[in-house]
Length: 289
Image (cartoon, rainbow, N blue to C red; front, top):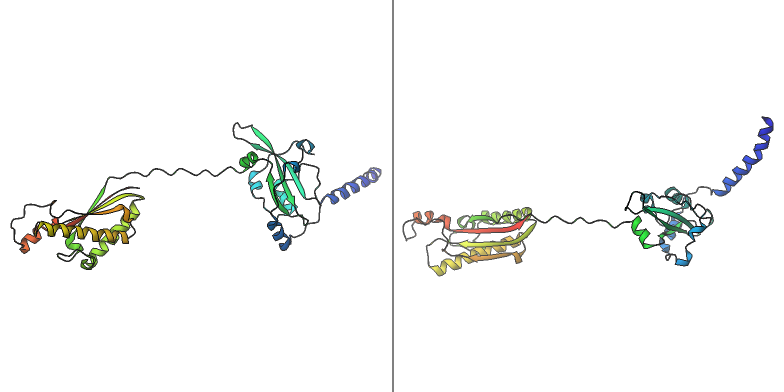
């Protein structure tokens, strides 16, 4: 046994020395050197600069972990690159060289066993920090970094027209129509309506604001009053964030009453109260969610 130990000792010593020569002592990456490597931005290798695949030392190549490949970045040291990609497959050397080359097999997805063999290169600066990494062909780069698939948004569901009827007596002072005639609770009601429309309609086709009056007064007066009230409500909806181009205001005067059995023609308190449902502003919304 003692003789065998003596015979093997030189062999072990030589192997140890060889392995030691293949490894550089670990050291922290200098931040300034890292910044220089990141800023280098070298040009892509030319077609003539890629090595012949037949000259690879490890011709079998490898199936890379593509998540690791995507982590590659300028400024990495060789130990960091080796942890991600493994040792290079060509015989250019490990330490003191400016380039590592790989033969990587990338699956095409056509069949479970179908793949193509691609070349991948990492280049280093004098501080042995990576300055860039490239695939030889655009097809290989696309296989390694497929474009993100943007989902097609679902078409909005078209909802039936939604109509809200607002009592004009609750919006405006009696016979009022302009912004100065709005009651505080009327202004708040319209602001809340605008917020509800924005929240419930992802797609807005149109909004129609229609003003209505009762039958008291002349046709001309009632038409102007109903149009002015519709205009004021429209403007408040726009102030609440609704696209003005999608809102139209219409005055219908007294032509579309909802109650018609109120007796009398003089504006008595009883008749005014009976006709109250006719004094209104209707907001119809068409859109989807």
